[in-house]
Image 1 (cartoon, rainbow, N blue to C red):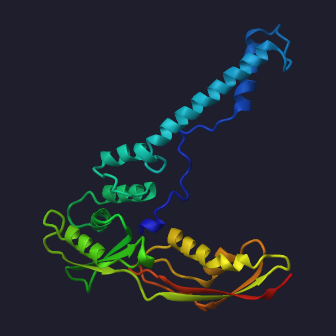
Image 2 (image 1 turned 180 degrees about the vertical axis):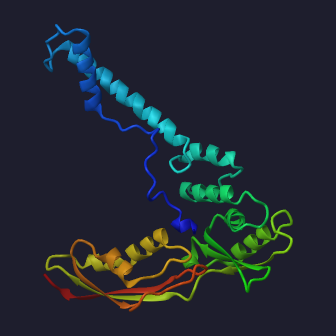
Image 3 (image 1 turned 135 degrees about the vertical axis):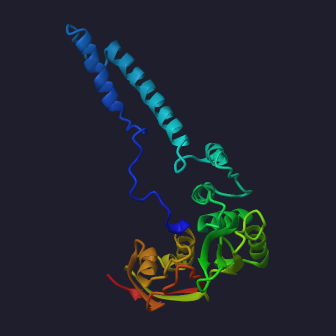
Length: 282
């Protein structure tokens, strides 16, 4: 499982995090008042007792929300900021300069998975991600069934292509004497393939502004940056879905005409993006 695929999808909300409802708390408190004093019947909204109950219920909801926040702060996938820093530090992981919460969170998961010093895939991924904050994703794989390993990198910048300093920093990190398993021969390479050019024909609804088409390149690049990773195919249907905005009647993906399928160790990158105005349709 790559870090791009490592998500919370399918996991239930932790039971420690309570569902909050002001109305439920207010009603339960009123019912408790009636239980204590059945003779009490002045339950109008203007009654002072109701005002006290409402104030108490509000304070209760604030307290419960604070307890929820404290519970989240102790869970890796919910913690943020300094709370996440302290959780990560428990696993000997420190935030890199400029590192986002999401990146620190996924790197901490790798540190946990790669606790063995025996040259595990997760450990090499963690070391590579720690060597340069600009590393977005890593694939580690064996070459020809022998001791030679490749560490393939995807960058957060430069369209995903790692530069020479990044490659050098990762190579130094994964081949350090206290990191590399003695039998491993390691090569660090870019994971990226040749850039894929994209051409779209777009039909707009009669009253839709042409500016919609102008925004499509930015939308595609932003979505690709957020969602893609090593092993992520570039599908025409994915492209069409990302630009089928309100005001768009039809999208035809001219290039690529078929899915660009990559291996588990490669990453597709985007070249030029051209969105052609093809007319207006109802």
